[in-house]
Length: 310
View (spheres, rainbow, N blue to C red):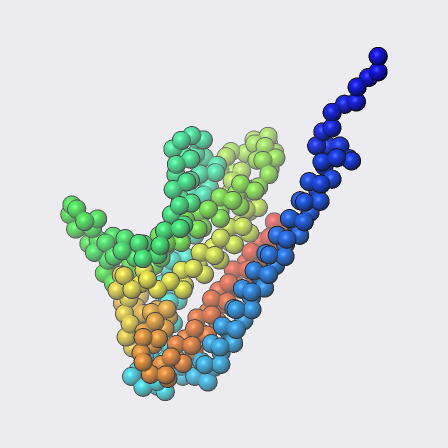
């Protein structure tokens, strides 16, 4: 009685396995080609856009443009008050966002008990990152400008001030920072926590001295993304009533303010070609401020990363 040959399996070297492996390799190469093509198209379009913006607005770029306020004459107009307004608003936005966002991420990852409530909170935070910015603008108008939730007593708002604008933008970017901070904290190996607990450290000591320093580069990345989005937002600031024509920058957190995106939007709505070119110059200044802030954040992230590795 002869033994029967075993049935052919997908792992047979001469059978189906080679066909599937070849197909997977072809699909993998096709995916690499498609993603590379998409990235190349995006980079080329971005380069064309930047060159066009530079071509239209470079001749207006000067120190007078950075210092002057808006004017009805294009040759005298500038972005100074709007620039200072954006710096004030973004500074306070970072002041509110960083401790609250990082604190929320630490609580959710290190202290919150696993369960339906915690899972629901995490899901809602992730969903809030995709809410349109105008919704946050309307929420900020009701909460921070008018100081009421629509029912009940009037709690007294901040009015159309830097404080209201920064709090509104903080609500907008908080989900981004929380999600990024959660991922950074989650990436810290559990062995680090176990070693700290084994030496007798408390949970807060473990978080403060071991988990947070290792997660800080990732947290700084989330902060860069959050601030980059906040500095270019226009719809929330329009909703809360940021000033489109202002001749001086803010003098404090309770001062009225303008912002660079608002000023650029105002120039683009003018029919004269000179103001369209002014808008391009304003975009150049906005990009310069954004890149400068990102460069500072990247240097801080690199420095913290080096100190962690020592």
